[in-house]
Every structure is written in C-alpha cells, then in structure tokens.
Length: 215
Image 1 (cartoon, rainbow, N blue to C red):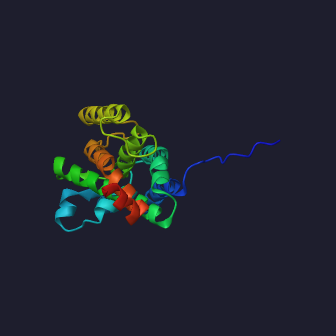
Image 2: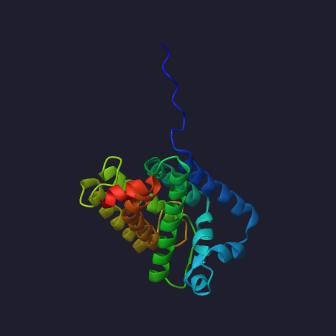
Image 3: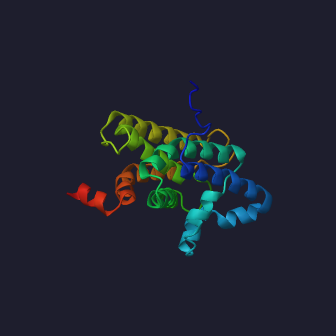
C-alpha cells in the first residue's frame, strides 16, 4: 500500500505569506527604490516625531541586502509556523496572526527609537523576533503558551538577549555588512511576542475562549 505523499512545505499559508512578502518586497525595493527612497520609508525617531507612524510598518518591508532579507524570511517561516497554527486557519485566526506580527514589529521599532534615537531602522526583524518570542512560549507549553519559568522559555530568552547584546556590542551579524545591527528591535520585539501570545491566542479563539480563560 502506498504511503500518502507529504507536502514539500508543510507550513500554514499565513507563515508562508509573511516569508514570501519579505523576499518579494526586497526584490521590488532593489529595483524600484534608490537609497533616498529607502531612507524615506525607513523608521526613525525623527519620522515618528513628525507624525509618520506608518514607517513602523513600511520599514518592515525594507532590507539592507539579500542576505538580510533571506535571513529574516527563514526565521519568519520557522517560527511563524507554530504561531500561525496556534492562532488557527479561520479568518479570525489569520487576522490575529497578521496583527500579532505587525504589532510586535511596531513595538520593536519603538524600542529601537527609545534606545537609538536619531538613527534609521529597516528590516522585518522586530516582527520576526515577535514570532520567535511567541513560538518560544508555545514550545514551553507544548503547543499552548507555557509558563515563563519553563526551561525552554528561560533558556531561549537568556540566549536571545545575550546573543543580541553581543551582536550590538561588536556591531556585526552575518549578511549585514557594515550596517548597524538593530539589536534593540530584536529584543523588544521578542519580549512583545513572549508576553502577547496569550492575549492574541484568546482573541483568535473568540469570546467564548476569552470567558473560559477569565473564569
């Protein structure tokens, strides 16, 4: 009897869509935008002070080079997969997944503006870090948000913070060239995902799940 064929890419389509959007948007950027155009859509504390809050999201579509874009795309696929599965494939779950990704990315930008005012930030790293944080909690609970004190959450959090502080100190990451590493966005986005996965999970499951959780 023949075994059923397994799909080559066994990942939920919202996670695949985020991954593809990172690659395609950088492809368009490399063709359509000059350095001045990239800076216009990049995030900075100056843009935020000028009321251009949309740069928190347009900056997530920009990257420094192909290595930067592909690295973020790979992380988005790997860690976005368990988060998307947890939220579910119903329209509500897909919408919550998108909002989770965008909000954690925005929080990463705000953290960057707080610690590195006056500099520009591009890349989906804040939102991708949010997916890493959310997936870490799911790993700690074996599919549902686990306790903050669980071994996977503690070890991953310590590793993430230490690694990013080191990258920020030496100002080097593979594929980044001479560009500054946005470690601030990585850390703030990660903690946003770590803490928000519970709330967004309840929202994805609707009012009944929220009432059960509160009861």
